Image (spheres, rainbow, N blue to C red):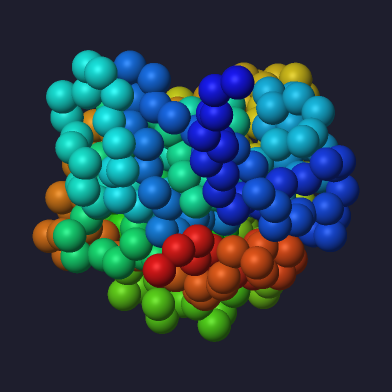
Length: 327
């Protein structure tokens, strides 16, 4: 008589079998992961949705890293530690955590459980709900690592943030202000008052004026739009002071952009965020102290992931869209 083996635990997850539009995203049952040594198993309560998710779903973004479908998208998660692997010293079962595990490799955030190295997570800001915390990691880490690690922003620096009302942008405005910078933001007029509340010293309506005609002597440009839209990166070179820095996020730095930057006597760098539990701990402290506010545009159930992708792809979201995975 053969031994009876228990069934493999499963979980709900959003999977896709092919690249394509939002309609390729489907709610399915997949095997639940188990933590390896130094990893934790996190029960996901909420998952953030980012532009890179939308691009990857369609075959660009991080598709070259993830490979061909099937896979589970999602990198931003907030939840509760369910199990710890051998060698984990920083977290315990029951801890509320948030993180951006594994990026740019697959993390599988659109699911009920994820596993990742414990040090890629941090304790969730006490002041935030899981919905709010899930809106933080990728966007806030992008802003933090650009301004602190890449640009080394100092008090008095003039920092220009394009797409300042978006997920990364609204964090970049606040972090730059926290670092003592003079912050200039581009956004549509309806969002100007809100951006000033977040700390912007000057706001430019990109729909009504050419920012390069209005601005000069900028130390750092955080370009969250890219050259694909109205040559935003290229036009930003003109507003930089000699030796100033353009950080081009979505489009990167083409050979042509690099040549134009060199000719103008300024610097242009591409950027990609990486997991950073230490920075997340610092950000949690700033959030709990009230120095950084988190804007969540809407919270949708996991089953409405296609609608979330449609909204993010529209590029007009104020803050972040979040998926509620569990209660």
